[in-house]
Length: 433
Image (spheres, rainbow, N blue to C red):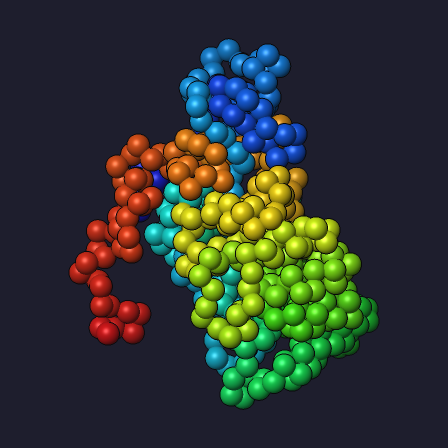
C-alpha cells in the first residue's frame, strides 16, 4: 500500500476528513462543475476537506496564504462515484440460504487491497462496495471514500447520526438460481423475496405492540435490516439484466414500497419507459466486449442514451473487476459515442450516482460546501488520450501520477505495486493451488 508508513502516523494525528491547514487554490484549469456548466480558466478553492469556491478567476477571491496549484492546460471535475464495486475483496452471504439481510460486507473488506489504489488512479473517490450477486439478497453494502487508511472505519461514510451508510444488495435472474435451498426458477425467486418482506412486515407489527416484553419478538438482525429497507432508510441495489427481470423488480418495489436502484440493466433499453415511469434510478454497466452470460447478450452501448431520452435517471458503474476502476471514464465516453449527451454522461459519473446513494448533497459537483473530492486530468475526460494526473479526497491528495509508486498503480498489470505478488502467485485463501 502506497505510503503505508506515513498513513499509520497520519491516521492517528489527523481527522480522516481534513488534511489542510492552509487553503488550496487550483488556478487556470477548465472546471467541469456538473451543476453550473464548464468554466474555462477557472479557480477552485478548497479548505479543511470542503469546497470553498469554484468559478471564474474574476469572481473567486483566493484566500491569503493559500497554496496555489497551476492548473493551466488541465481539467478538473468532481470525484467519480462508483455505485457498484467489489474492490477490497469482500464477501457477505454464504451458501446456507438465498436471503441473508443481516450479513454486512463491511466485515470482510481488506482496506489494503490494491483495488483502492486502482480506484484512486482512475479518479474514483467514492465507492459502493457490494457483496456478490449469487443470492436473492446477499447482504448490506457499504459506502466508502477511497482514502488511504488502516481500517475500514476510516473509509466509511457516515450519516449525521454517526451511522455507517450503505444499501442492501439484491439480485434476480440467472445468478441466484441454483440447487435448494436456492430457487430454481424466476417465479420461485420472486416468491421467496415476497415471503421475506411479508415476514419483515409482521416483525414490525409485533414490535409495535407496546412495551410488554412478553409480546415483543426476539431480536432478529436480518428482519431489522429488512425493516430499514421497508422504511426507506436503506436503499436496495438490485442486480438485474433481462427486461422481464427488470420489470419484476419494479413490480416488487411497487408492492412493498422500498427504494431501489437498478444495476446493470443490460436490457434496460427495452423497458426504458417503464423504468422512467417508476421513477427509479439505473446504474448501467458499459461493456465494449459483451459476453460472460446469456442473459446479458442484448447489452447495448446505446442503453444510456435510450434511457436518457426516456427521462430515466442514469449512472454508470465498474463492477470492478468487470471494468477496471482505472478505466471508469471510458464508460461515459462510450455512452456519448452511442448517442448519450455529454452533460448526461458526465453527470452519470458524478452527481447522478451520488444521488443514488443519498449523497447528492455532499458529493458529485464542484459546489461550495460539498466534500473536496475532485480529479485533475491532462485533457478532456471523454478523450481516450486523457490521463488522471491527481485525485483528491476530502481535500487531501491520494494519487499523483508523477509519484513513481502511484504511476505503477495507474499503468501496471495484475499485481503491479504488490511486493508479494510474485511469491504469492499460487496461494489462495485455502492454501496452495
